[in-house]
Length: 159
Image (tube, rainbow, N blue to C red; front, top):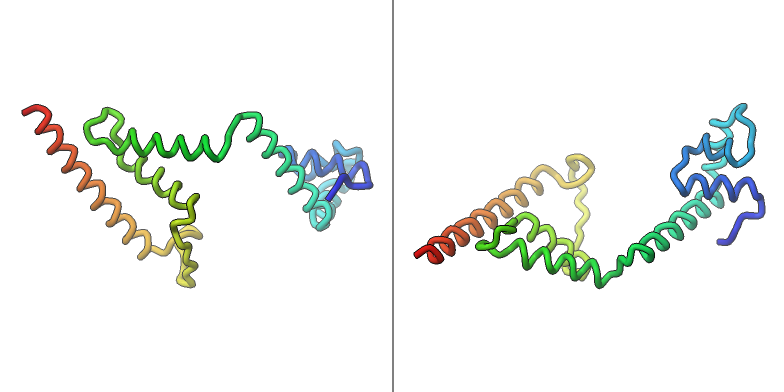
């Protein structure tokens, strides 16, 4: 999609993409305040308007990411560093939960995990309570093992 032919629509889309409310964007685009809320809602419902807003948001995000120097390599290297730093039980930076989360994110990025959609009732729109309990038990067991390993390593280091 390219720039919209209607200049006010284009301005409206730009303002919405920057985070303005639909009503504020409608007024700033040069439309009257009378009925602004209803007319802004009508405009937002237009598929071309929504597509243009999403396109502008993507452009803004891409420019921000590029400007910040955030690359895929930078993110992966950062996650790898977190795993290496936080998974060492003798380190002052030892934080197994952070290491586990970094590993999870790396696994997702590399496509190692299969996402399954479950038709059961979800808790908070995410996992079912049974799934949450199982994951919590797994993580608690893993953390306990790491804490025991850390204690043994510290004892060996002192001895």
